[in-house]
Image: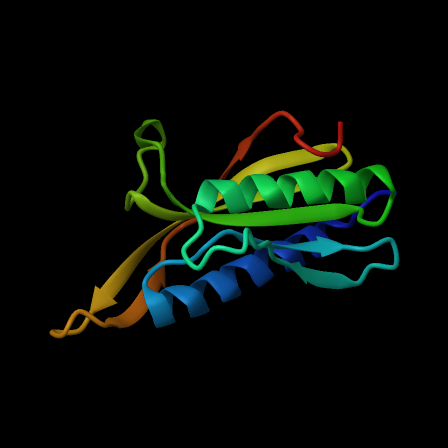
Length: 145
């Protein structure tokens, strides 16, 4: 089933908005995501290892694994997984800190990078989050092969 560009954009915006909220509150975030069901509904996705301070990579891989099963059983038609990353220098980002969103559906697979800068108060608390110009990189499909 084809996914409209508007639905893919909705997934990206969900990830950007939630990442902004988490960066504002904590200055960082664990991987999270969202999916589109066959009926077009968007749902949040999370994962837990049961640990209080899990490794981000473990959560990311846990979400990929769970989503792979949901793709195989036709429970989702598009997915987005967001991670707080250092953007690879070969992309010459405006800031090395970034939100990376794996955005994938049948026939579409990209990493969307959104560099960001945190404005800090004198006490170190986050005063604001500035997202800079996003860019995408086509990648081989992870889930919709």
